[in-house]
Length: 184
Image (cartoon, rainbow, N blue to C red):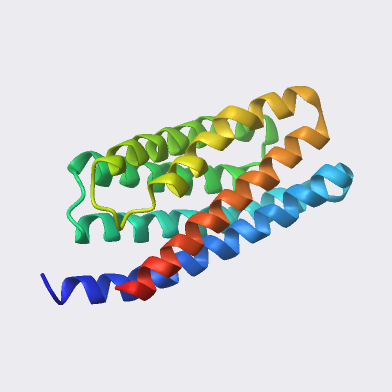
């Protein structure tokens, strides 16, 4: 067990870097979309695909950390569900280049699944080891459910603004994983 934590820390740090980088991309895309919605277009869908896949990689890293520190099965399963859903969320954005209407339904469903997985994991983390980033995980899960649908109903500025702030939650989660990986 003693040598597992250092190896996990080394694995978690790159996952944190990937997550923070992808979060920064989403912040930029959301900000551009809020200011000039026509400027994003198809580039939005093409850019979100790698960002979502990097988010999924970050969630796999977070799950590895959770396993290494002895988190509950609820946490590890919820993180696995969130990672799978985030992967499908990214792939649904790729599908938007072919059929945007169907893709919107698909990535909406997968975003909800990923968000619920993150929320469940965060709630499970509250009672678990202190090494886990419970508040950053909760923010990354709760923010899109609480703001993005309402923002979309209100218009481009609040919709893309909510997405930009969602990117900030991923930057924070990534930074937390980087710090945790550096401490292991």
